[in-house]
Image 1 (cartoon, rainbow, N blue to C red):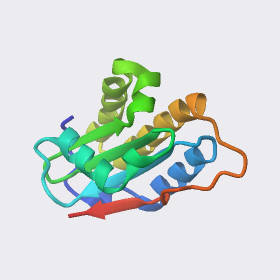
Image 2 (tube, helix red, strand yellow):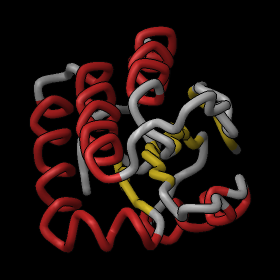
Image 3 (tube, one colour):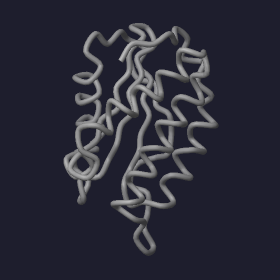
Image 4 (cartoon, rainbow, N blue to C red):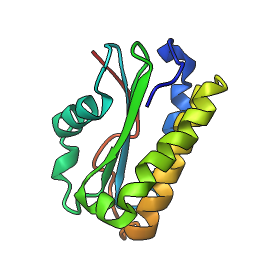
Length: 146
């Protein structure tokens, strides 16, 4: 998906981390946000590469979601593991991307990312509720990658 963010600092990391943490409280699923410093002509392929690098494909329930943002190429992707995709189907991803893009086009990058986190969190909590005494396996953070 194309959009207008050219400055990664335009995303308030603290607010996004807070949204990730809130979403994580209600699900056994994991949500990560990555902001790439490089161009990504093929953001879905780049997101998949980082998904595997981060070990998000090794969760027991296969219920992780990655929001990958590449400001230099003005692209992004939201991808989920097999179990997530089975629950949400094909229409969820383009609908989510379109709604995030609406925020991005208005220059509200933080709200766009938070919206993506919240929608992914709603999906995960509906199908993968939090488990008793669960521990977060992945850090709730925004990661900048080369």
